[in-house]
Length: 274
Ligand SMILES: [Zn+2]
Image (cartoon, rainbow, N blue to C red; front, side, top):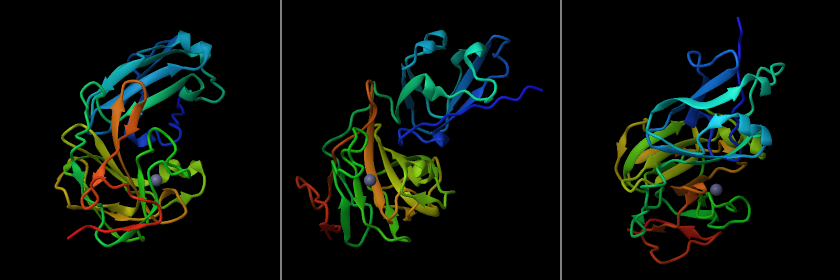
């Protein structure tokens, strides 16, 4: 029996492995070619832009840009000649050949409603420990407009905006100070009416209080904060993303109720206005 596994390591929080399943397609694979299927595990569309970074990638057949519908499975995602696969490792590392830009929405239809006023996703006053463009980790197009709120482990997290829960993770108990822990963060991702998604990160073990597919109201309880993933202090990482054709997910600037037109500053405390 020929057993074959492969490595799919989406680096630097573009996309954690649980967002998609990529598998060898047993029906379409042949003696010379391995065919991979992809399944979108999210209930939002997923967008992939695939850039070759290795000249051998020219022997692989794939689409450079692809939108995968919610929960859709696409066979023929990639056709890889067996001869370029390292059979001693019994693995195929996509990252050797490609750079992936991934989005949680359809870049051709998504448009953020900039007039929307978000609710702070917690109740009592919290310190903003890293704001927009923070140089610790909000230094990328995906995180420029993210917020790190200094929550305690066990604090209640609320939906900042209404929408549909498109993916959750809550099975991790791990955290650490290196990027090795990036896929260990628990989270809830909610898709909004305009197609954008909000991510609520670093939740506690079993800290998602909603299920995939739930429709949630603004202000509804959705989770319990924690300290999972790439972090050494308890906090909530909150960010709104839209997909773009060139970059995949990019963070979008948002405003919070009580602070419209104001920039939230690192080190300052913010509370919901009554
Ligand atoms: Zn953050």
